[in-house]
Length: 113
Length: 114
Image (tube, rainbow over all chains, first blue to last red; front, side, top):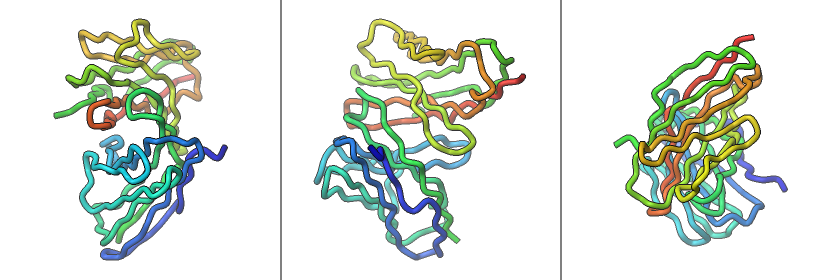
């Protein structure tokens, strides 16, 4: 089992550029989620999905899009990057939001200039 | 409104001593889970322990135990016999059944002193 994988590990973008952060899991988990981690603020939920074709917003969804066409993959899209999106992004998966632990990917460090 | 509160930005503990990291939560959802994660300087998120809202007994995992006081809405992490490798950031988190939301606290930085 690879667990939760994320690519890329690091990325530098210019303001206004777009990119997709990839996330995949091989544990057949229904619940997948994206978080951003900023200094002093812990992790904050961006978007989540409870199964293929079903996504919803978390605490800080603005500027991000998601889709879930398969159980395994949950990409996060930045349509027009802004410096405020400089952060570390974590993807996670689990059987549910509350009944089981979430397994985290290694994170993607994003710098927007 | 803050859902998860960790009031200790930094803590120090002597090696081999026990330490308690505080966490309080706020929800009216009867079905929720409480989690503690460790984040070492390398950056990965490591799951430590889980407590479900319906669990009657406090959760334990090796040297980690969760002191769950439902009426006070607290879920403190107790680390017994601290080791140098325990030095890290520790995050308390809560997952809710209603709305599938997941919230993290701001974390506590633990330093173990030899």
